[in-house]
Image (tube, rainbow, N blue to C red; front, side, top):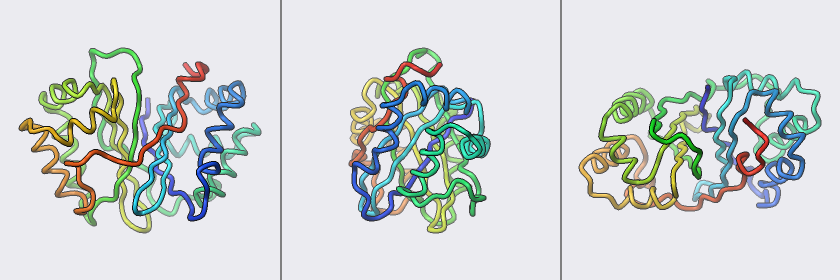
Length: 238
């Protein structure tokens, strides 16, 4: 299974209603949505709107049998009306033309942590932030180290989290990171991580400070994130 956190910038001037129109169409036509996502191998899809000083974003979390490139190729070549709507809407709302070859490397998931003792789906949350220039390799090494430590599991269980996924995406403006959290209440868990004085959590936040610009402060809760879609609520995907 492929786990990917996808970041879509919102074009300036787009309204919240326009930003949420894709999610609204999916909810309004669950049977069409289910057929589309079954063809694309998607088993879970969640999306979040994030308002930041840099502009608005939609951050989507997808679990699929296909990699991102295969997923996009299948969506672009689909004869389903809902897939054509999706491709056109991504271009109109986010300025991303999925029918054209990507100008940068595809999104790369650099870390997945899951709690093996949790076998049910919990609530999700996703956000994005830009990294400092030239830190991609350091970020990969940090995530690999942190996610392999026993303290990671201890820390996240204390926060009520059961999934954490990190994807890095190259853009013309620099690399950005998408993070997906899942747990009892990931907003509360994130706030408690920000305030935590646990040694592992302090180390974790200190290492993050080396990878992100000063205005991205993980000692403060992530703000401005609202859930706009959750395929679990439609009960149509396996």
